[in-house]
Image (cartoon, rainbow, N blue to C red; front, side, top):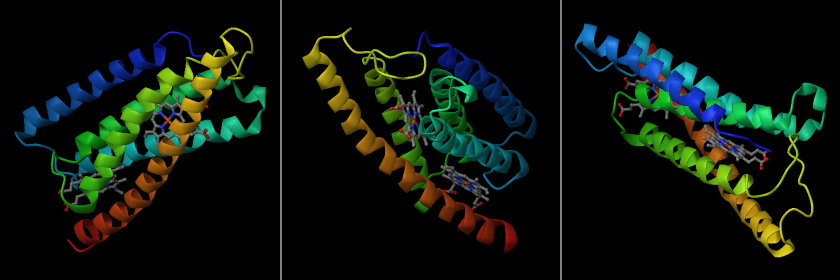
Length: 184
Ligand code: HEM
Ligand code: HEM
């Protein structure tokens, strides 16, 4: 079971720190950090690494069923933390320009975060143990069935968006590095 909103507060705290650093860079350079310059590029790479962790780690833990790797609820909390901070860094990386494929990758990123927030609330409607296993009998049968169906439907939306996002992000990285970095 996910309890409280600790991961959300951590994400907001780290988000504020990143905003302060970003604000300081804008203040001292008197410019929006370009996506291909050291700071903007760093935000893109680091944010993308966090997103890649979001995409893979929780799923790996979910499939091992090995409790010694840490509780599922902690991995989901980490998933939500990296799933909010990573996209925020990537958003600052864009330099507020959203042309072409990179713009589409940004849109997919916004959609997956929004979908994650919705999924988090459906997920907590199903009573679970700390290891994410469902507990029978605490909800009426029909309410439980409804929540499970909703969760299954949500997975069929959230997972393909994630895949489309990473395929297009890799193409963006290849193209951006080739045209903006190597051909400079
Ligand atoms: C999901 C992750 C990412 C998203 C959503 C994203 C999005 C964007 C956007 C919207 C732009 C601005 C495009 C424009 O000028 O209209 C951009 C530029 C750029 N991105 Fe990313 N980016 C991501 C990850 C990365 C990563 C990991 C790298 C490096 C390996 C990277 C390298 C670049 C470079 C070099 C530019 C500048 C291109 C230029 O100056 O024309 N991006 N990105
Ligand atoms: C970069 C952003 C994100 C990506 C790429 C991403 C990707 C994924 C993937 C691939 C899964 C499927 C895990 C599995 O069943 O194997 C998943 C599940 C989930 N994600 Fe995300 N996610 C992101 C952000 C978020 C955010 C911001 C939240 C919440 C605020 C969130 C909440 C959830 C929840 C509740 C589940 C379902 C857990 C379960 O059914 O076991 N995600 N996510």
